[in-house]
Length: 272
Ligand SMILES: Nc1ncnc2c1ncn2[C@@H]1O[C@H](COP(=O)(O)OP(=O)(O)OP(=O)(O)O)[C@@H](O)[C@H]1O
Ligand SMILES: [Mg+2]
Image (cartoon, rainbow, N blue to C red; front, side):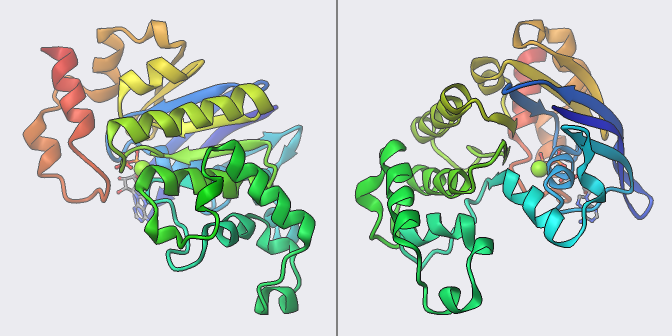
């Protein structure tokens, strides 16, 4: 169903994603792991067309989504919803409206100006919130919710699009362990119950082991592992995270905006 063929992304001289190829059949839950800067976010962003690839193809049911333009590209984006580490909600807007924003591109300018939504859409948004256990939060401002609740609102917004694929970029990196579990359980439910493909960039191997059917390990823009969670041995972890990974090295890296220490901590633990 999803066939990534020789996809490369260069930023100037920097090769962020280097001739990456893999395919995913059916509604799998796939985790992408790797050190900071490995190219995980860039890969997801190319799939969703937030970033243009330098070369390569991504075929979905035979169609190269990297070649789509304008309205067709936007239609593809609604088929492949994205969830971010920082939730990307509109903080001062109520939760229900944030969820309805998942289908903003289907609304006319007048409807948007006056924040008018068809009744059926409002009911569907409330149904989705109910399913995710946060229906009572619907009238509150998004900023009033906990991080875990906000991420569930972001998932609800994604579901509003009725996507084939959910791309999640470090969905739990900003959450405490309890909320992280709730959010991952929610993504897993959506994967199993709705049969939607989920591709999630994850920082810790434990999470990948617990939730994923398949794990792709990236290093320096290349795929260095592609297998099942039980194939993730210490040797494989060393291959993905690098034998030289140390807490200090990663902690002093300033190039990467996200948590740069978690993967190195993991690597240190695996290698100890
Ligand atoms: N907009 C950009 N301009 C220039 N270089 C970029 C840009 N985005 C990413 N890069 C570089 O591309 C490489 C891959 O970055 P990417 O964000 O995909 O890594 P990542 O695996 O998601 O890392 P992290 O775990 O920190 O989120 C890094 O070297 C990064 O500095
Ligand atoms: Mg990233």
